[in-house]
Length: 340
Image (tube, rainbow, N blue to C red; front, side, top):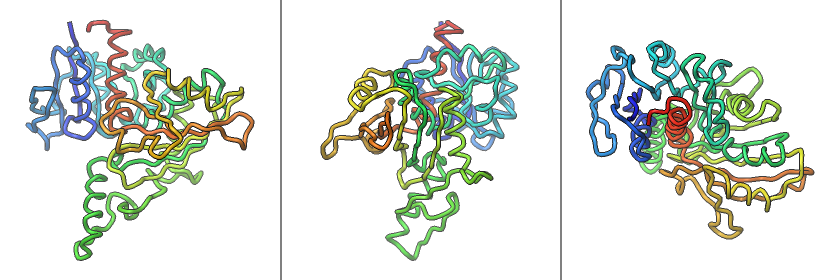
């Protein structure tokens, strides 16, 4: 016996990936509905070897459905997620709306699976920010071994994190560089993204950090440990898919790079590719379409007593969004609903 699953926002980048991953991982689906806004009504989307026609989110009745994977913005989520939850359908939400709600668990299954039981308070589970998700997968096994005191992270985030408009803007600007008569000014981003990097993701806060940077701090504390100190600089780079992070970690207890490498090799969701030679590391191009969080460049930090540096790369549309949501659905089914 399988589940009745709803994918909300099925025509977007993340919605497409959710459908792909549900099929790839052979999630036990008895029935599936692909929902979209009225303007996308009737659009066809793929689910394995099947083709689904999208139906109208506005008129959909969630009664009798087991789980709804939401891949729409906070405004639409605010309107429709409570309706789904009230109908007894568990919402797994990819927006930022519920991430900081004390009554909504924020889950990365490799890190805090035990928190899934908290779903019952509001019938909602939150998916973390894409940059946070891959980082905490890397931090968790190291924290268990040596207790992390402080994390300094710089991110190199692909334009797909800003949706289709971000990908289109990079593509159009890149072409226009070679055709100066067809100039493409920045509209989605604050500055030119082609052949450039932009140290600005989301809005600026009074503290001087951006909201993306604040999210990494708040979410890491909620998912992993509130005592960990985190500081982040988040940068948009001209890469279509795949987020990269340079992470500096300071521990309370001794841990060297060799032991950290061994621990990470044995940890769930992680692939270590770390050879100290040309090409002995992973870049965003190589992670696209993969489930793993890739770790490279593991080395000691000689400037602190117990510190290491590492390089972390993941497909942000997968582990940073759709894959994590499907893993939450698998966890919920396995640990709570137990139908599949």
